[in-house]
Image 1 (tube, rainbow, N blue to C red):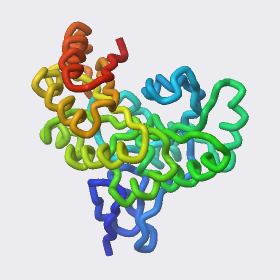
Image 2: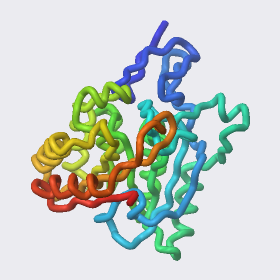
Image 3: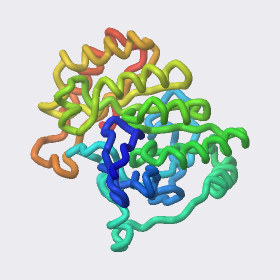
Length: 280
């Protein structure tokens, strides 16, 4: 019998033992579980601005944890080595991992306080497909006076967001484009991501990032619509417009023209108070 996974908008119907599109959620005895709990591929003490969270404790650092897997399939993925990987790559030794319990992660974060660390960031791949780990780490971190930040594509279900929202101090949500067609290309839903942003912005600090890709989402009309909608949620939500570089399956086009990026930033500033350009 198949069981529906309700962690994200894909709603994968999984037979016993099968894994969903994200390569993390699987069916065991009719219950959907994560195979990535406590499995970490990347650990780094990053500047908070790298997330990017420019307006959340600027000048600080945050201990960043990444795992593997993603519920999108972006042909332009900047971290495809881990986001497109799963258990098969781990078993073949292609993806080194370390096991890090929530207690160990929080201990590491506390030990990094002398280096400017304010907490834990769940990032690099899509962290909310492994939301149980994010939740458990975040609860412990909060108890120890640490901050929690999630860098996400915003495609988690309302149930998952409700589960983690009380413990998350900041989100950066990757709003990949502003048309249904763009989201169909990456196997996501624009409306789901918009709902995520609205809900998160009502409870936590939120910043939004859009990777500007030549010929796909770089029109002034699209960026103007995106910025106008974001301002309707809150005009003080920072928007990061980042420069695209050829990566993964999208090496057939040039990097984003910097003049184009600056022009689009000016367009967005007609609606939003804080607009940054990145990757320049």
